Amino acid sequence: MDSRTSKTRELAELAVMCALMFGGKEALRMIPNVHPVMLIIMLCVIWYGWKTIYPVIGFVIVQIALYGLGIWTINYVYIWPLAVAISMPLRGSTRWWLWAVVAGAYGFAFGALCAIPYVFISGWQAAVAYWMAGIPFDLIHGVSNFIIVLVLLPVLNKSLRLFKSNN
Image 1 (cartoon, one colour):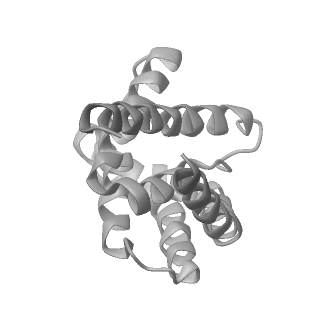
Image 2: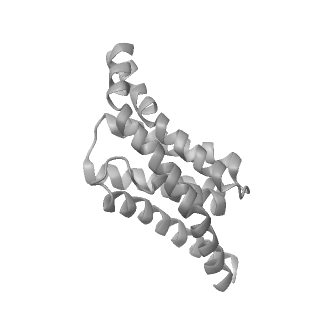
C-alpha cells in the first residue's frame, strides 16, 4: 500500500471513529451520562496517538451542529481534547484496569470540569452549585465509563488489531 492510500485509509478510519463517538452517544442518550465517547477516544489513542484529536474535533462540531450553541459548547471544546491528553500517557499499556480507572475518574471529574466556565460567568458560588447539582450524574458517568472501558476496550483493541492485520 502506498503512502497516499495509507493516509486516505487512516483518514477514513478516523472519520469512522468520529461517527462511532457521535452515534454511540446518540444511541444511549436516554440513559444520562452513559455513552462510549471515552471508550472510543481511548481506542483511538492506542491506535492513532495525537491524531485522535481529529475525530474528537469532528465529534464536537457535529454535536454543536445538532444541538446548537450554549455554555456546554465551551466545555466540549476543552473537555474532549483534554480526554485525549490524559489518555496519551497510557498509550502502549495493556493494563486495561488502569485505562478503566482513568476513564472512571474522568467521568467523576466531568461535572467539575464543566463548572469552570461558570466561575467566569457567575462566580465561584455558581460554579460550585452547578457542580454539586450534577454530582449524581458524575457518579453515573464515572461508574459507566469504568465498566464500559474495562469490558470493551480490550475486546475492541483486539478486534481492531485483527481488522488491520487482515486489510
